[in-house]
Length: 263
Image 1 (spheres, one colour):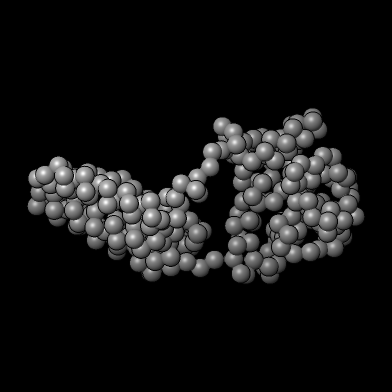
Image 2 (cartoon, rainbow, N blue to C red; image 1 turned 45 degrees about the vertical axis):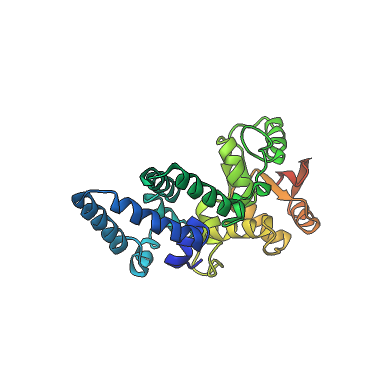
């Protein structure tokens, strides 16, 4: 997955409206500082651009981190805090209270009109539970607990793995996180990979409904990854493949099927 600095910036702030507002907020803050502090802030910004926010730095950084996580470097200058601080500072400098009210109303009007989609109220919804996880995760947890095995080794789709591990860290994942990260790249196929990683790619491709594999390939992959259980989406082709590979259904949820590996 390739990414540019501008794409990462947009992923962080949402769209150009917030990017411009962020830049304007920095200018407002700079003019509120003393000359010494203003120079200090300008130097920090210049060094940040030189060391982090340019195409050359991006290529170097992405040799050590996944490209899709590069946007997190923008957390160094949190847009929400900077914009809020600058807006309050600007309103406090206005001579007449009426101007402050006008600025506040104009700002909230821009928010309500969808300058950024996820600020619209109709995109918000209350979480189903205190863990903010889907109900399937709890159904799967009950099914896994009923097996009576501590630290079970489970092959599961990436969305389930990310959510389930945040709720129950006792399970061992048959498909490693770095494998799923690698599957996001165009060149993730088998060339130059170890047998273990190839096996993880087979299971990951099958369980995420990316690619079909034969029962024999899946059976070998289950052996190489030492998978004891499998979670798969409720898709007929995947069910048939896993059943033929030696997996027996234990439980089902609204969206997934939980299998025991019997090889």
